[in-house]
Image 1 (cartoon, one colour):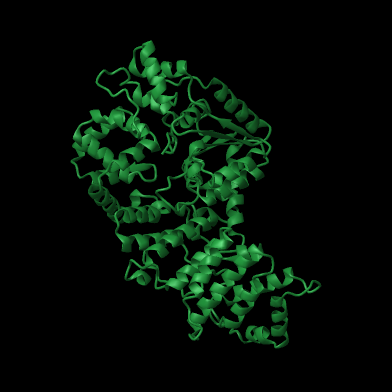
Image 2: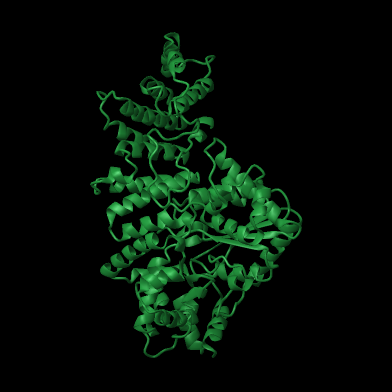
Length: 615
């Protein structure tokens, strides 16, 4: 991850660097002036963009180093190798707040109980039962917590690497930017401009954020030729010749990360002065060639384990298989060379791109073995990985190791975790991974708590609806319905078909107003009243009927609904529904409750789908 992803309690660690800080005076002045206005006049945000390695993290580190201790809270979005990790930067910020301000700050921000915070910080206690307003309550409590943390002095919240942000993180960021209204809170967010491809969600979001009052955009450019020379001279300890300066600037184009990597070797007569196809990777890996085999081996192991940006010392020790003294010697070499950065309990790469480059050099055999080893270590030493990251990291490792049965099971539990935190986009991603592996895992059903393929597809369709992707929900529901025979009339199959129709109806309602009523009515005809999900279906159908009033021209679906009303069919079902039928009012599932059998299943399993019902 970037320089700021490690969350430290001592401010100087945030800006630790062995290189001189060059230039950036106008950018620093903008950040400081913005902080003054945010603390005293109105809250605001600064969005810092720039290409990879251009110095965004270093600029922010230099800025926050001058702020009062205890006023900066830092979190980083996680790399794409760990799909499904929701709210990652805000979880880090909340955990730092919990460590520095204590549980009392959370109780003050959530007078009704800290249960919603527990969705992101399991150490706070039990997660409450699902309600329609869960997500809104969580967002409102985070806002209130930041306002209270600001006090009279103000706070700066740093969110690193927004280009890796999941949908839930982006939603919460937009909520805060639009709803913070009291002076005291400054948000500073960084992102890689070169990662924002045409379809990237952040590319569409940034223009909207920039139009919000108090939001400023800062695009960080590479260093000038003279500034790059000053940086290289500080690293080398001697000034560069004119020829060396020309070569350095041609190879690095003023990107500070490249300058830092190439400064020591520029002008070396033994070096290759010609451009190579993968110059970027070569620049990152070139300084590593001077390390001995032990240090390189430890670095490769760390590149596999640091999938979330950092790796705990205990986990690295067990994975490396070295004696403690030998490991510490190798780590000291890597830290002294500024390849790894040490925090209180572990290590992180100087830059995420360096971790990528080292990981990309692994041969297939070691690659698979190391990923399998880390997947097993998560089971052996679960406390070495935070609960909110455990399932997703294990799914990533098993998938990389081609251990497909375990990858499917871990992805399933990562989906459960994402649903518990109301991160529906990430839940959909994990369920899609489960479905992609389904035909390649003989006992897939036993690994997803006994659910059938159609039931998993139904959940994925529900997550797609919640995530605002109705077209994907339609495709999933159609695919699953095509596999269910209309001749099967047992209660469970009828319930699954009804749930798929309900979700397809909701998706159609979002795609084209009113077009989903027929699916909802058909679902009501099929759904056994005593099976889970019936009450939700009735509520959704009632909502849709009210939206499409009788004073307008009736659609075919409304005509069919009126025929049902005249026949007293649905009302008769409602009256006959047993009062003791165990159907939770906020249940999203259409299957029997599972028996938790995973270390990630500590949070509540029941999940709500009322967001679609009240939209």
